[in-house]
Image 1: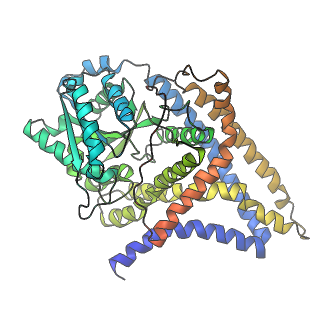
Image 2: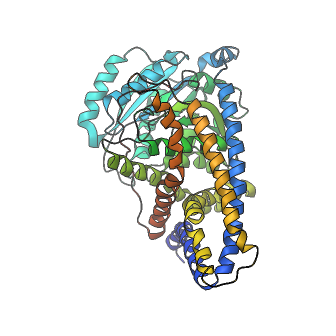
Image 3: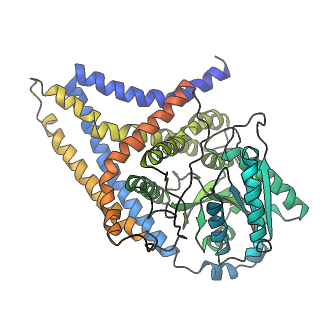
Length: 500
């Protein structure tokens, strides 16, 4: 079998496992409903345990987050000998972003309590949007001239061989241009900390102080990625309820992952050493999910001697919002599908980790398993629990005497729903504590909506969870590869992330 066919088979495994589960339950429900009921019992009990487990980690992550944002990290930095020698290289890739959105990102950086003269800001545009970008770049460079050590502007050429248009190719191009600048200034790579920001990301005022302290006190800083917590707060008071639930659910999931470093991946905005970035050859320019891939590149390049460390300081980002609710639904679906398309890392890991005998087996297994199991559960669990799982009960009730244990399935489902209700209530409470100040044009009743909106959770888990995740694995299975689509940013008000 050729290497191409072998790799294509690996790409098909996630889709086969998801569709195989759905087909298996349906066929079993028709021909052996009792067996299907046993399967559903085990499946539901597993998720009952997992939901409880996830809730506990989310709460512990929340407590750690509340603790760390209250620490004066700049004062701690000043206790370290070489902190003043450190530079922060900040990439802001953009494509058709509104000027006001980019302005808010730069304003957030300017409000950092870390010395701005240690910032090298790179604004990366696309040749395909050169008209708008050139105008915006001139305006922003003029406004922020002299505030940073340097503000670089790069334009990623269109139609380069071996690339797909998107954030990864933009970042890779900007990274190499920044390398030329750093070399010209003779700045040691190990003294440069890189942060890649999505074009809607507003940093916490303490982010760079916290990052510097964590970097300088880490035993292997040049072989580590640092992953902050994303808070979708920029436009939280203006968006639709279902979009807020989806975004905050993502925050809580990642907050729980922070306490399980063996599961942690780089996501969206993240930080790492410039040494490692150069060593791995910058971000990949031919994939959709370059953010999650960059951490895996480090693990591969350094033979497993690379890790992803949690940061309990937030970055504030946009919630998906369109001019109409239908535009919001469409954009939200595409964003979730793009995130689920991180499953493209599964065949890459199997192919590359398998050939690297230096990476410890358990580390390879954990990353490969977590990637496959994560998207598999994302695609199957809500549909099985809320929809397909009831099919064998309906089939079995058609004149079949049920064993006593199978008659308890509705009770098990009730326990699962109770656990879900508790989870929804806790999510509503935690979400309310993370809200930025209410803008003047939002009534006090909006606070009540911020709690009641969590009733949408079962709906969002299926429509914006299972369905786009199944879409993503199906596209990969069929070889209908997904391109990068930018989520449109629009808002009336904004908020810098606070301490919750």
